[in-house]
Length: 300
Ligand code: NDP
Image (tube, rainbow, N blue to C red; front, side, top):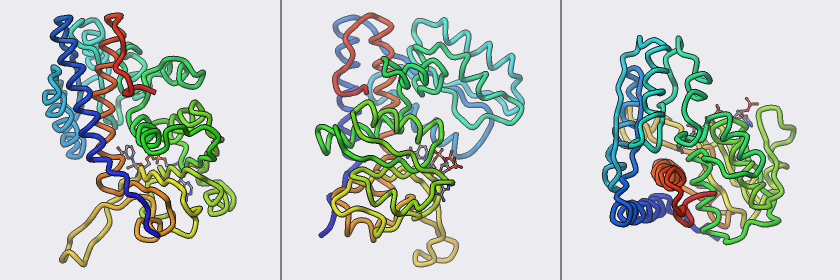
């Protein structure tokens, strides 16, 4: 038996379409154009690619995109002063500071200086607390994308056993909170977990967010389980030619697809959903800022 492949690319396109419709309504009915400001400090090549792609998609859904590129030696004071300016700009509804920041900048301080209502990454300590207490928060984009795919596939997640492998602040912990919010019985596994294969075998839902290529083999997966692979790992691909590489997830797709009921591929699974959810969060932030109804199905 082969699992259903959850097509994140197609689903992300659908989410972007819903965002675009909502943006058109905000413009047409209220004369409001949501705006997303992205701040990039330094010249990290991967970050530059992400920021470019975020800007392009922001414009494609009809929102305003503001890019602020600062040199790698920008002082903390200058960065905080830019964030303060964006916090006070009524045309900016979402602010994202691209991580990682250069070492001399205090990431926690910078993130916590963003107005929580504009914190579309959901990393501000207030949003972390709101999510943890089941209140209306800005939810981190990657876990939100995973939740949307799970809800779309299953409808209700109530009562399901979910295992999240990884306990980072950006993926593992918020993912676990979201699953708990949807009434799953949640286990968070990490590098000190004893007998991880047995823990994973008990799960109806497995979310792998580790950063280790193909670490979860098919024989850890309970037959019929849903597997969400967050990992993005680049490995050598000599079969494609000398020096070539390819992307793989944290799950060994070829063996897991034989056992799982549904699975996200890498690439083309969780990845595209992350930017789609950033756009969704920006439109949500814009609606909340203006006291308007939030787009349905685009929030936790
Ligand atoms: P982190 O490195 O911050 O966290 C990794 C987690 O995995 C840690 O909690 C760690 O445990 C755990 N871990 C490490 N080794 C093992 C092991 N052998 N067994 C069990 N758990 C283990 O990573 P992130 O959460 O930031 O990212 C995880 C993956 O997701 C990466 O591949 C990243 O590239 C990808 N990612 C993808 C995104 C997307 O858009 N698709 C967005 C964000 C991330 P411990 O805490 O004990 O050290």
